[in-house]
Image (cartoon, rainbow, N blue to C red; front, side, top):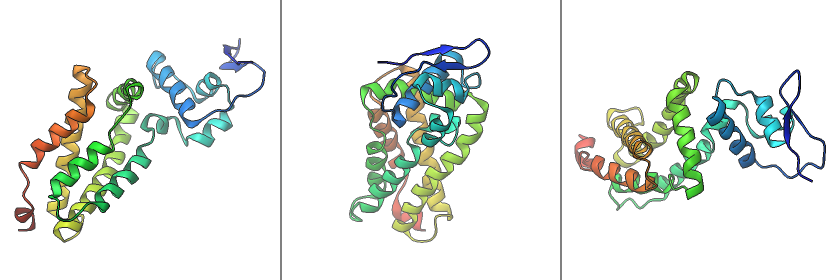
Amino acid sequence: MTRTARHGPDGPPAVARGRRPATSREDVARAALDLFNRQGYDETTVDEIAAAVGVSRRTFFRYYDSKREVVWGEFDAELVRLEQKLASASTDEPMMDVLRRAVVATNRFGAGELDELRIRMGLISSVPTLVAHSAVRYAEWCDVVAGFVAERIGGTPDDLGPQTVARAALGAAMAAFTCWARYDTDDLTGEVDRAFRLLATGFDEDRLRG
């Protein structure tokens, strides 16, 4: 027996009674993004998201700490993957080639995921509270890249060389995502790869050490 959400007369959608099916983190995210896309991020409540999935508010918070975290999805896991790929690369491979391959690898999405990714990117770039929070998330991404560069060229992640590469890499990644979303193509990895190949022509490891 499936369960459907219905709006009660005095509050958020109520959940029809019945056997509770298994619910995943992905189910919660999918329902939330659909609501955000249809009625707006600020206009959507946690209670509405929970009702759309058929779970309680308490269960929602078992999957996500906040509504905001739903939009960022698996960003934390992607940071871990990026750090691991950078750390496992051969030191014989040029630094910018390693960075390009690692960023491309952590930005591979299935066809069904791309539509959700467009919704996420649209929210992050347009909702004021999410725009403000993005500075924190992007700083975390830059920390991973700067740490890798510092390992390659010496010094600390806070030095000019690692910080320049990290922030330039973030700019390249954001440019690729922006162009991908603007022109409505399915080749996100191709855009990221091209952006980082362009970036690589401007950085030389020996000059960064100087």
